[in-house]
Length: 333
Image 1 (spheres, rainbow, N blue to C red):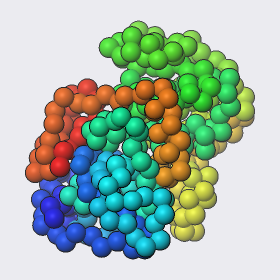
Image 2 (image 1 turned 30 degrees about the vertical axis):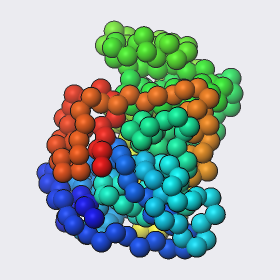
Image 3 (image 1 turned 90 degrees about the vertical axis):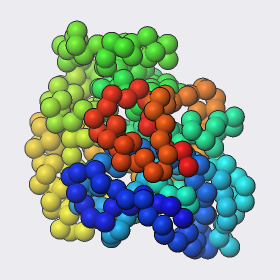
């Protein structure tokens, strides 16, 4: 089968289209014939070796973290899926490989696609949907009626996170660019703040929860708008001790992450607040819940107008790296 691989970590985008065997499945795995794979900034981090402390890979490595497709074969102990099912997934981090004609996936990481959705639309849901759901439910433990601020929400993450947050009963405030204002107001956000016109930290206070998509430069601002006892979860600032403990890392990595996140933890504690870091993980049960929300609220993620084939992955990665894009970049197989 055709698969897009890297042979070593490198800062430059230089993948190769290789011919490798179709993967064999274990008793609990499902073999998927990939129809569409989505391209994310996570691919750029992986090929550069930027997440090696969280997950280091043997080489050569087949890239790709999320996809949609058709079940081709199931293991003997697979009970939830059958040949011919239309499924989608955020692949387990330790065993990625969506940029290929076939991929083997643990049944616990899969869900059936939303009813009525095509493969392209479905492929854009799992990673951002799970990131939003895990941020809100696992990390923030947000309750219905509470207020959530999402910074830098005008991209693909915000397009999934806002309707999921609203479906979970939260009041949502977002910051983003002016182009996305009307689209987000139509989803029912309480307030949309154009970051070029206004500083959200000068307008807001007493916020229950914050999801930060921007990173270190916004940490102090995001922390400042929280109420005492509030919680900030970042997708970019960096790991800390709590992240290492929750993910059962080795003692050495726990020490490294504790040191790396110490200043953020200390700053939050000083204000009586809490800092969390999230790196999204595969979870088929959660993906089923997201599927229900997507179906009930007719959530349709934006897809970039550029379409790529499996022999154009370098070009797709360059587009994600440098833009401009107007939605999720996809590869059709």
